[in-house]
Length: 117
Length: 116
Image (tube, rainbow over all chains, first blue to last red; front, side):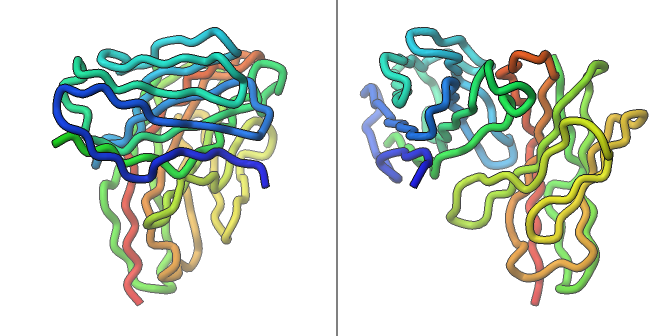
């Protein structure tokens, strides 16, 4: 069954600790994305990666870091520099640049709700 | 940078009522347009999309949307809502570049509550 998995579903951390959120996809997609969702704010792009070993900052990258060492995986680290890290984090993927117009259709994982205490 | 505006934050309807959710975007060039839905406790899923061609597009579960280029709008409609349509709906836009723009911009969402 193809899809995107994010783990864990709920995550609690103490203030000042870094935390890494997992995202894995088996859709053979080149592009992957991280979004943050806050009530009434919609989804805001944190980072995206068009291809392995490459990634770009989105609109709200400050306090976050990513890596893309494998096509299937795009972990997001929420660092202690992120001033308001409590949020719902969504990972997505898309075919990528060889998909034509369909390359812009993104598929989403179930999300991780991070609470920083 | 493009932006997306969804006119209603929260819409409350009775079952069988008709639905129209507004979406306007600001971008002068060619765009790809999407509506996503997030049911309670579930992940975001695609309702429908517009790339080109017939401006009236049909999606899953009886939803449709009309692209009006002159109005920069992509409104979502359903003739008769059901309680199971209770969810949050997001409009999203990306400029079309041919090679993938990777810049999907979302509206802030509209919560729909359907009363049985």
